[in-house]
Length: 128
Image (cartoon, rainbow, N blue to C red; front, side, top):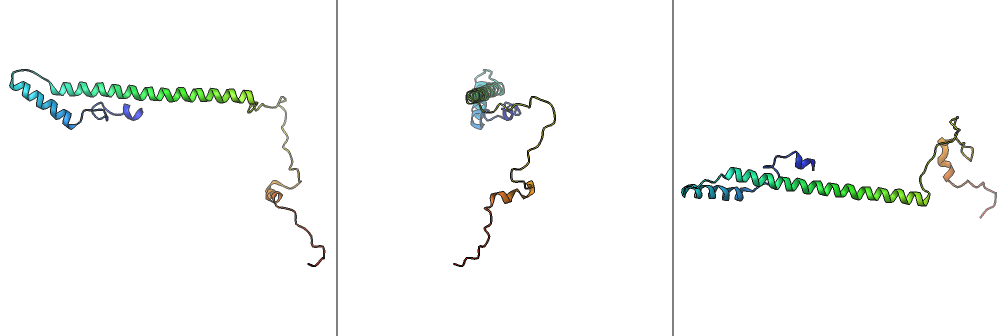
């Protein structure tokens, strides 16, 4: 929508094309020959402005539709979270110091990759 708003009505994709403008100027010259007055530039500007307004309105309606749909999805997700008891992270009740848990295996965190490896087996002296 910002792309459309940044353009002038005569630059938008809804503007009258070359052949449409050509047809308007031909009509103006043929009417001038018969003594009638027809302003082709005013007709082109009017067409471009009307088409631009319709294009902008359609873009706004499309944007509003997406926003409404996203809002409904957020409401559905919040409702599902309430029903499923997901989320709801709460802060501790006491504002005191929060202790960090020590690793369960007693190893420092820097060697945490060792926790995922299986323990090594010692050689028992048996030959195969």
